[in-house]
Length: 275
Image (cartoon, rainbow, N blue to C red; front, side):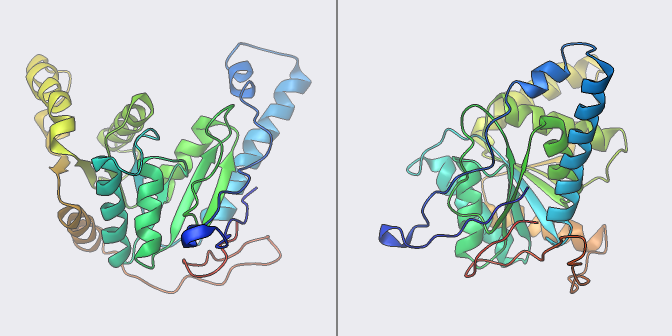
């Protein structure tokens, strides 16, 4: 279930870290992929998967226009990519987008932090792991998930654009899954922004010089990415596409249902609550 998280009593005004999710179930997804088990176990797992989707639907339904920022958990506060991600979060929030990340440290923390500092709504989607299962201290609202694939659905379902910061295997997985969903018309042609032109240059060279040259992808698949080092340019591009291509308008969302356990997430400045 989603969890409350504000505690501004820490020294220097920085919110203190709090417990993140429940006890880790890091072996569960491995067992799920290891072949057939008893029918009762499989049925119980099916209900756990369904419960994860319900948690996500209930917890994220009212976040409003949202942009997901992907990136590495390994960059520290003094790293240039942390600072860049923090600026990205702030620029998106200034254009009234909620900023959603995987809720962890590194550039995810930075994007959430920038959004909160700019007065925007900061969202996290946690995956329960043996490690790195603590939230960054800049979340107004989060939902935690047992299964990677459920979490990934939520990170794409509620977003109007995707900003891709430098990262590792997980970030590459998210980049290419999202690009594949767009290529195959499973989701709309939402903006894909690669932040950090120097970092992504070798990957883009491979895409154009090898994959396009061999015909395994089209040039248009690569041209779909906006590559920039400017947070303002990235945010302006997201806003322009959202308005011009999809006719996005900022409207007051309908009332949350108490009977369904729904809550409308609060922006920074108040206690963030889970759904």
